Image (cartoon, rainbow, N blue to C red; front, side, top):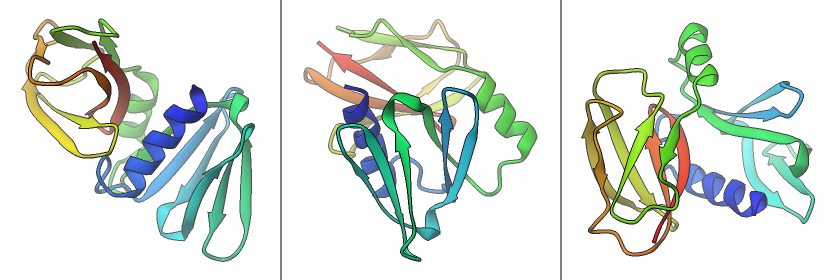
Length: 161
């Protein structure tokens, strides 16, 4: 399941759908180590049963054991290290998950945030603006399935029943 989620997020992001302005991908391992890779140097990402392999345009490769990956996220070159620390320390959460009619987002850092919902194919399906954590996001126009919600350069998956 973890392999499928990582593959879906990377596939969507590399198509430029989720993180249009991203300049790098960061792989955080379970020991807290972060490995930053410039997207302009990456040829592709592939997955085996146990590893994520990053192939670089130069011909080099780097492998990450899937059980050692805690998080993969994307960073815009314009984001400062202070802002990046805020993003890293907060854990965006969507609940209830799976959801029936609406979802809520917790750990929002701003008063007003733009919320994008993408289908499993990477297409933007819905855009909302949320003013508080107690404001519901209506899912009544979505059919049942797997979705990715993007807020402040953080992606979280959720399931619509």
